[in-house]
Length: 443
Image (cartoon, rainbow, N blue to C red; front, side, top):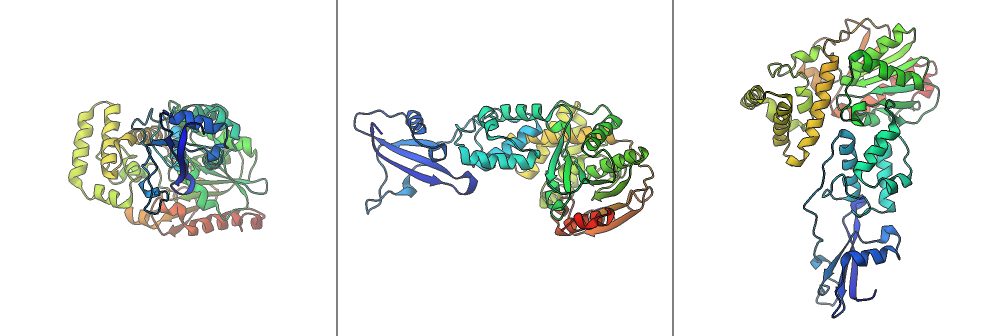
C-alpha cells in the first residue's frame, strides 16, 4: 500500500473471539492514519481477513535472527469508555452473546458490531447463539441493518410482537409438544440439557418482561390467560405436556388447572425442584421484610458465596438494617444489588443487571402471592434436587395435597439439576409413559 514501508498481521486470541491485528510502519516522511489504512483494506479484502485494529509503529520488532518478534508486538489500546449499558434483560442477553463472540467487553449498546471487529464468520456465530437464545432463525441481513445492541433489541422486540413470547427449544416429530414454563429469571434457555433425550418438539414460554422492561402483568389471571392463549394457539387440543422448573413449576401447575377446567387432558405435568409459592414464605430469611424471593435471588451466587452469606448472621443483620433505612423501593433494590456484587466479586458496572433480576423476582412475588393450588387429575412427576430436599428437611411435597405426585430425587442443587443426565432421562421416560405412542417421545 502507498506510504507503507513494512507491515505485519498476527492472529490474537483463540476460538470465536480470535481476531487479526495489523501493524504498519510508514515510509520516511509519510504520515499514516490507521483508520484510513483499514478503510483501504476493506475495499480489497473480505471482511473476515480485515484486521480488527491497525497499530502504527516506528519499526517492527525483530528477533536476533531478523524475524518478526511477535511477542514484542504491542497490544492495541482498548477503549476505556464502555458506552451505554444495557437497559433490559434482552439487551443483557445480547451483550453476553456479543462479548463471547467478539472476545472483548469494552463496548456499549450503541457500538457497531463490525466496527468492533466483527465480520461475516463471527456474524454467523453470533446468529447461531441468538438462535439458541431466541428460538428463532434470524437472517444475516438483520445484523447488517441492526448492527448495534440497541437497534438489534428493538428489532427483536418488534419481531416478537406484543404477545408472542414462545421460543422453539427443540425440534421434534408428532402433533404434541412439550411446553416449558420460565423460572424466575424469565427465560427458558436453561431447559436445553433436560430435553436432549426427546424426539417430540419442545417450546419455551418466556416472560414478556424480557423484551419489554416496563411491562408488568396486570394480575395472575391475566398472566395465565396470556400464557394459555400462546400454548393453545400452538396446540389447540390435548393431550398437553407441561414442564416447569422453580417458579415455572407453579406456573405450569396453574396452567394445568386451567386446561382441565376447559375440558382438556393434561397427560403430564412435570415439576423440577418446585416448592409451592406459599411454602417459600418460610424459607431461610423471612424476617427480611417479606422479600420471599430474596433467597432465590441470592441463589444465583456460586455455592461457596451462598454459604458465605447464610453463614454470616451479622451480614444479614447489616442487610436487614440497611433495608429498613432505605425507605423507597429503588434504594432497597440498590442495597440488595450492592450486597450481591460484593459477594460475587463482580465489577460494579454489572449492578444494573442485578437490579433487573430483582425487578423480575419482585414482579413474580406480587403476581403469585396468594396463589392456592386446586385439585388436579393430571399425573404429576416432581424431580427434586437432593440439596433442596436437605434444605427443607425432607418435608412433604407441597403439591401432594392436591394431586397424585411421583417424586424422584436428583443429585445436585437447584441449578445443577438442570444439567443432570438423570433429569433428561427422567423427563423422556415420563413423557414416553404419558403419550399413547411412547416410542416417539424419546430416544
